Image 1 (tube, rainbow, N blue to C red):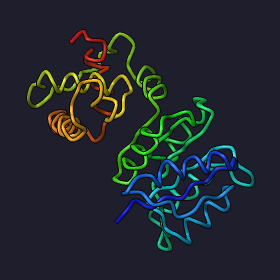
Image 2: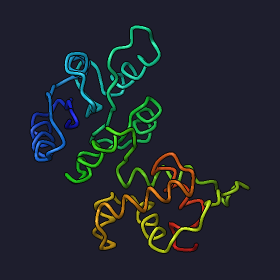
Image 3: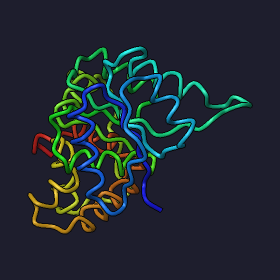
Length: 225
């Protein structure tokens, strides 16, 4: 079954552009595009999409409030459908990023993201993974990284990473998507995914963000390890 998507953005040109990009993929289906937060909530209840693409600044109800309302349904006896949420916005203010991620969003992209990144974010969200714009990933990692190490113990892989796995992780920590890593390292996309899956097991990491954070903690991202 294709990944079903609803797009919520008050700019028609953005909705058209996102729909064209996503519908060009065989494994993604756009069920609807709507212009405000209330319409997004109604579309989720009516269509039960796998992924909801949300702008932040929209009429009536903004994207952050929509995110809070949807994720707040979890655990309720009358819980209705909760899609994976990817915020796509022009504004990368720290307060928006933190509010979206703490509110339960699975991704945060800027509207100038490449079509490949948009597609990858939807696919990642659909299987429960997270994907952030490269600039935001790098900024969050800098914020999370303890100054001077902070006495924190860096996790040790259960097995040493291979040279190629280290190359892939270094590129990941730089904010590159799987497709961009594949192109930069002259690997197939499936090989990149295989390397990351192996690294995830070796690090006992839950997702690619934890892998990237480990790269920053260990010094691998700077090439010093």
